[in-house]
Image (cartoon, rainbow, N blue to C red; front, side):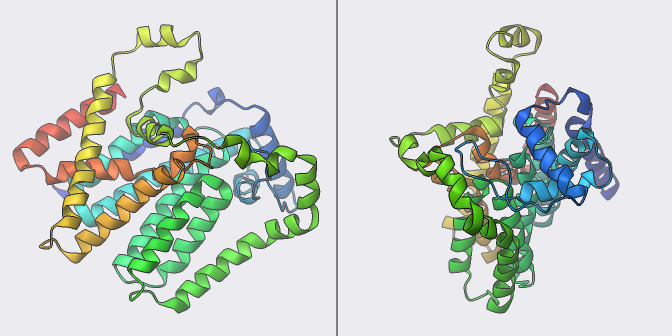
Length: 378
């Protein structure tokens, strides 16, 4: 593919991404949680307070103030709900661009365009990028964490460890679901410990500590009173203990394939919605097959000795990124919700892109055409 064609296709994909995530902000829901988060962010933007905690989580425990800090940024420019809504869409658009850059660097143009296109039109990815919601901030910082991790651990550029740790800290403090990526970083440190420049690792951890200080202050001063008044915050784990199930795996499938997006229309309107749209089940299964194919490529890469060290390291990294959040939220003590699996984005689409890139040339073009058609249907 010529450079001009690549640029034109990338511009088209980014344009689609931006329109789907930032177009028509007036139809975005704005309810109690969104209002509470925006109120705290507005107070910070106006210089009235510096928040040391966020709004309460669904389990009753107070959130870190990171999402408040982040949403205060656009509100310093324009104090309107649209500012925070468009900010969310912009970060998610940049996440797609980051996905393209990462895949392009290691797997080529076809893989990058495929991954970016799937990420751009993924129904659940679009849904989780169109409103003021802490977890909707995750994809941008998770992609940044992934890029910095590859540069630091695989390309042996130690200064990127600071960005890797900071991006993880911001993501985890924006929403607790990103803590599922902490074991990934831990295993990367173990596998590549000979490559790690521990000076930069210490600097990164120190920077993380600085971001945590305000919330730590809150917990030490007022947090105990909050927990005493919200008994469910201290009893959350015993109340949600359950047997081993596969709900996290199911949620990962939904986020990847776009299946059951009709549920957003409500318990009565979904039938009318389904009657008006084309059947997309074959699209979901085609996307799923491409993702499984990419995972198979990574597993085969790790098992074959003749593969390059970089290829094996990349396969190890992406498999950890995809699988550990699913495993974490499958553990009996932890609750599992659809948005808790957002940290796996955009690895399923990277896997699909890798699969497309591995196909023979004559089949690759057919698959790319089919992929473009499924994107329209999604």
